[in-house]
Length: 444
Ligand code: LMR
Image (cartoon, rainbow, N blue to C red):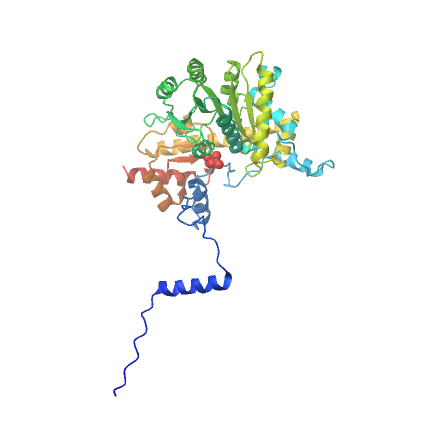
């Protein structure tokens, strides 16, 4: 009898091998519950554009690269600057024998919060005299924006929409969405003038439902560097009063914008003077160069009235509960430094010098950039570079131009055309102007 060939082995596929291995491993390890958080359940989030930009800059080996991305002050050598007054305060803290590492109270370091309060509304403000302002130390400005947003979301009886300027600091959108507020925009930047779209802004404030929350940048608007004039602020306040809107001020550049602490807090002080009920998120990252220490404060100011002080103490107590559930109590280090400076007249005066150093250098860069572009005859007008103020300039460069600047010239900036003026210095100003000139002509 002819011998039969054995049947061919069954065709094996990769998936059958995987199934077999998986059943073997279940057999050995014991069965586990199916995962809830599968890749399908949790979609991958995009990288934060600003921090992604910072990483890309660091990884770029080019010796020509220019970092105009994140808003952090740099000296003329493109290096982080430790303010001399901060160094002094820091040294004194290290030598202080009474220093310990105990918890702060829920509301933070009292010497810090009371000084932060005076700094923003003025030491003689009726809000302080009438005890209708409460202040909590927060995780920098971001924490203050969040605490304020959370409070409004939980306690505002109508839970109104919050109106943000278009454009605004990107994180505002995320923070207010996370606390469950609904968001809308008001026009702010005019592409034609590269200045304030004042009519558009006022019109939006007039048509927003009565009692809306309006987020306002107190000075050095991020990302545009465009601020209302004092007369325009007066008109904004008048419309907001008419419509009973609630002002939510974000202030991250007091003293850093103009070099003058009082001038940079003018809008907030004016609104307080006008008797608004309002809140303020205050950051000390930029004006003290305390970026990593996360030092800030949140203030709630009640409108004047017989009940104001009691209402304000209730608000303070609820804010404390919110703070306790989220961060328990704030970090001490940065607040100790700021507090030493804010409460010591000599150190305070030195701080004002440091503020003038930073704002002055940025102003020089503005003038230098504008002069260079104008001298080259770069198509377009460049006067907005000097009329805008603070850390940023909204150049008007398009996304395509921004991409060419990055790919060809190793210049890093956000894709909306914002540049951090602090990234410019006397060593890279010519190079940057040359890059902008070339890219503008190339894409004309
Ligand atoms: C910026 O806008 O670059 C800074 O305020 C940093 C930040 O946290 O976004």
